Length: 202
Ligand SMILES: Nc1nc2c(c(=O)[nH]1)N(C=O)[C@@H](CNc1ccc(C(=O)N[C@@H](CCC(=O)O)C(=O)O)cc1)CN2
Ligand SMILES: Nc1ncnc2c1ncn2[C@@H]1O[C@H](COP(=O)(O)OP(=O)(O)OP(=O)(O)O)[C@@H](O)[C@H]1O
Image 1: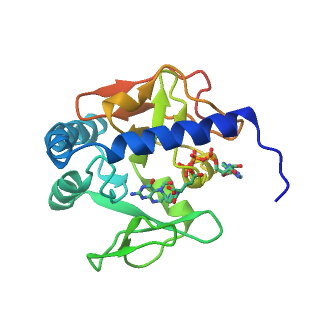
Image 2: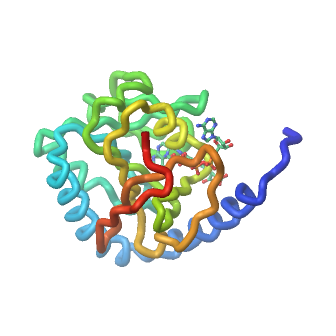
């Protein structure tokens, strides 16, 4: 499109490729082992905030497995909003009343259900976002489509936002651009991190 590529964009692309490759190298045993801890930590986070309503995504095979946690949350009567990718780069949300899974526009697993618009996410008590990496200031890098930056950037008041990722993806520093939205914390298979944010959320 003739746009200039900034150093941060370039760095992000290289880092994403490295992180993607690292995830692809995890064995199914390593992944299975990490699921128990991740599920415990996600449950603990819900308890900590007393969340009765959350936003979370269905993980794809290379991502830390959110599914056992989602199963627990559903059984516990927690309202879950799942993202639906739109062609315009925004996210719709659904509670997925059909209980059916499909593949979305961007290639990630999605749930089928009545579509709620982008602002439906304003109501939740806790937001769990996918991430490729985060740093100690809560700077987050996603997989490069800007869906969550746009979603979080458009929220007037934002509930706690935690990135879900593997331990090795917590880095000293993540390349950042002006539109990048920080997260308040991160959840990995071994811990829950809370960041001191440089740029406080509105
Ligand atoms: N499970 C899951 N659902 C999710 C996300 C996610 O990261 N994980 N999303 C989080 O936003 C949204 C979808 N985001 C996506 C972001 C990038 C690509 C993608 O195909 N990226 C290319 C490379 C892009 C690049 O590196 O520049 C690729 O992976 O080949 C797909 C979906 C909504 N749902
Ligand atoms: N708030 C925004 N408004 C408009 N465009 C945006 C916004 N945030 C990000 N973008 C655009 O989206 C693209 C991807 O951004 P970036 O590389 O930061 O995504 P990411 O953080 O990896 O993705 P995601 O948020 O989906 O996990 C960039 O071209 C960027 O300009």
